[in-house]
Image 1 (cartoon, rainbow, N blue to C red):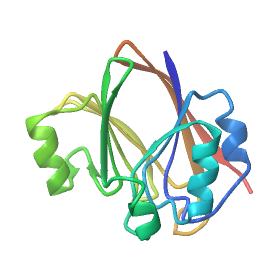
Image 2 (tube, rainbow, N blue to C red):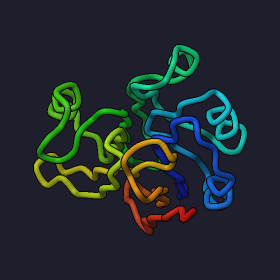
Image 3 (tube, rainbow, N blue to C red):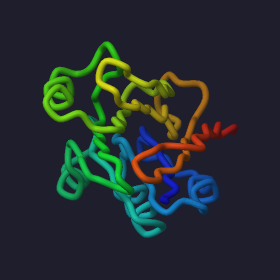
Image 4 (cartoon, helix red, strand yellow):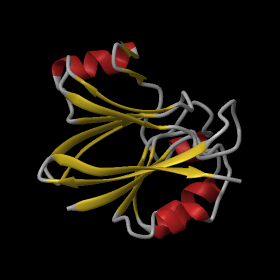
Length: 163
């Protein structure tokens, strides 16, 4: 079993509570728009890190992280892409990929809107962790934690960061 800490859209903003809430996690995943090498470095030094670059990320981050990160962990096929859409309204690139090789879990960012939804059409779990940074229209900053074990997802928690 692996415990995952998931965030997105930090936009260069660092909050020490990221580490507090991800202390119990085995890995940290970031769904793009990291915004600075400082944020990326801190997360990479803290735990095993997986992520993607987002539309605001510069070449320094794009040299380190892919646009799409697809991997298997604990029996689950996982795909992360910053701009991916959501069930019923997927980005065309994502739709093409999941139509031919559907992951068990699709993680996207970009919208700054927290969304956890099972897509019955593709039989996948979709998670957008919302936005953990301060830049954007969102009024609540959010993080997500969950477990992966034998291809199953459990104990999903949404954490609201109050200022």
